[in-house]
Length: 156
Image (cartoon, rainbow, N blue to C red; front, top):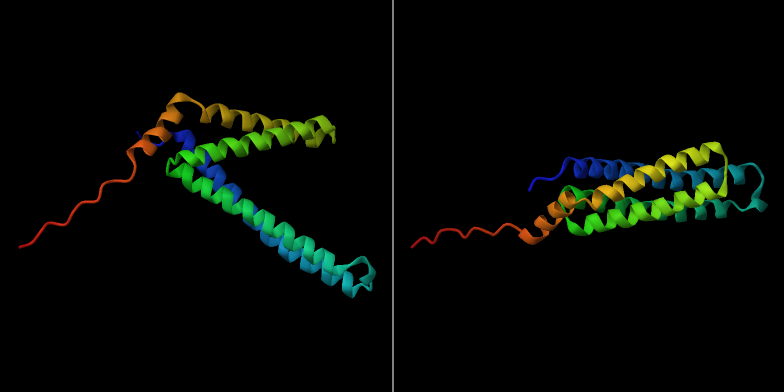
């Protein structure tokens, strides 16, 4: 069975997320260092310039870990790996739950509108990943396993 078009689109979204998270990770490292330099050159040493660098490093590592997870999931979706479908289900579920939390906090119309849009997208992704045709595509790939290796001909 061929990879469904929706899975290809979902994989592209995950690749885009990987790129965005990688950029945020790099910017976190840079921003922490820049804030430390700004604090130290402005004569505000008591604020704690090292704390800014530490926060930047921690944030960069966390975003980097999520970028790796997203990239692996994107590759797995592209390759129709069953584990990637499960990871995408988990990530979409977690994001949907977090968006529900944002909606209930009433942070403002902009936050709520964005949260509702993201929630709808997550629910659509979850619905799609449980469609029988999509599940069958991933299961078929899992059951077929790797292609058998061809033996080289024996030469007397």
